[in-house]
Image (cartoon, rainbow, N blue to C red; front, side):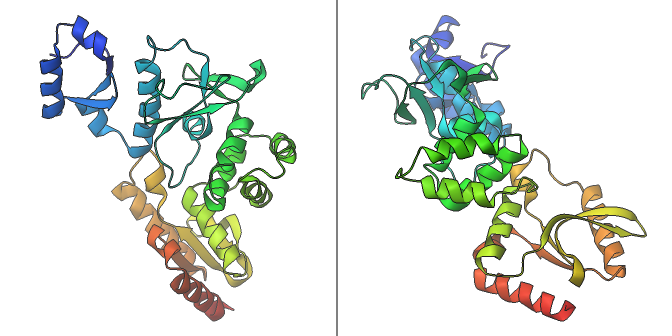
Length: 304
């Protein structure tokens, strides 16, 4: 049996518990162990039960645990790895582990799953999240946006501002980055960010509406019916048209229960009786841009 009381093990910990290399290989083949990176394993049942965004954070924890006895420290988690430790939304981003350290690393000091960055870090630039050192929130946002495209940056920026990131600090940091790759995406994302966005899908919907030159709706609109107060993802108030994004489950730690779905439909029915028209958007609709635009304009035209 695997050692109890923990889910992550370094190879040396398994060897000290009485396993040998053949035992470990057999456990991996059977699925009882999953090799997360060189020299670090996780319990198979734990890994299987985790959502994708939890697995992304687990890979950072595996790096921290796996390097505990092989690294002299001196690095902090940064860029998208720091963003994951903060719980920020990331859209279409890989799971590589990003670290920042003061001295340039050797080519063999990190695995292929690690992206090292070199920069001097002041004491105030480093915070601890879940016991792991990482760059401060605003620095993390800036670093990420410099390597992401505009839409990815906007998703991140919306959520960072919602979580309390200081736009003034981000603006100050970006002012010193003239000419850097990615600074245009960073500045555009900050300019167009909206902390009212509650999911990546809402952010991408807002961006698409703006890019397609559709009349912008108001986000997070409160509406009333005989059932009480309701909050809509987006609404064109004067036309009583609501747009709801139905893909939230992909980025949250819960599945909609039958009761939640039932209440959602009852809410829509109650508002429909008050004269509201609903446009429901799913992930695939955001990548069918012509159909999306025609559908929205047709609905707004009828309402108008």
